[in-house]
Image (cartoon, rainbow, N blue to C red):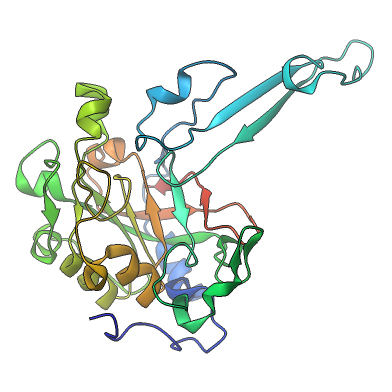
Length: 304
């Protein structure tokens, strides 16, 4: 039901951070205790942009979305024509980056990203979300995520390389992974789906996507996770039209972002982490401080 209990007012009527409030100093200190090897893994897809090139199309993304573009200048060339020389004997390169995070690169959804009716998470007015930015619950309110990460490797638990496009991960699937989940943890869920882009190409990737079911989202929220991170494009599953099939009551974004204030981290690369043989680790992710932004590109990191 749309009026089922969530985290509204749990941290006060003015709260705009939601479940990130669970990342107390004690929780962060405990998360640091997961570092046993000192090995660092990058969990992000690359931003492979280039001026007037097909490079951005070679990285997994949802069809039809504006792709990241990376423009370079060298000593005033390309986009920055007219730049003055830096000085005698010096050379300089500069960058411009244009990114629409949703569906195109590894990113973190803000609590203002999705809602229903007239209010955002915690009852904040939705009419404050305008073309110039969100006056409430923007990505700038999130801050860095430093948490104990827990990997739910669902394909491994099922004995397959990756899930099928129409697979939906239930609460029983998460429980079957056999990992311990504590309040404040970052739940990191692997479907293996990005590997199909590499193995079979874009059309296979766009045929749909596996993801969490509504009961799995409620299961995670009930266990007080601080964020949910997944290697698919929407945390929940998608059909061949790149849309969710669930109704409003069971929509994963509404369950997690809107009702429970749990930020969603999407389009991670989890293959090396899955091969590391670790289910707990220090998890780090820092969004850009985009004032009023609905999302931000991130580079999630696992420290083993």
